[in-house]
Image (cartoon, rainbow, N blue to C red):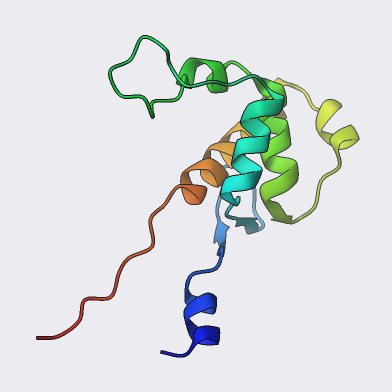
Length: 120
């Protein structure tokens, strides 16, 4: 495989998702590791200190941080684009949908690409 193909196969991906209550398809992108780190740092989300697994993130901090979810959506939502002002003017029902989109983006960002197996 040449370098260009290798890099294309291993670049960040986009995908369309369907959210309950929304008729149009929504396009999201994977967040890079740097984007994920910056989001965590900006919102003071740290690794659990009392955990044996040093790579375990404090999930409660993410779940309870609506500003973090807003930033995830602003960075990871490709189509339709939303502004921070539009998101801050939403009611609880709409914020629940934004939260679902944020969850989809986070899940998609940490997915490990399937490796192609080589024949013997």
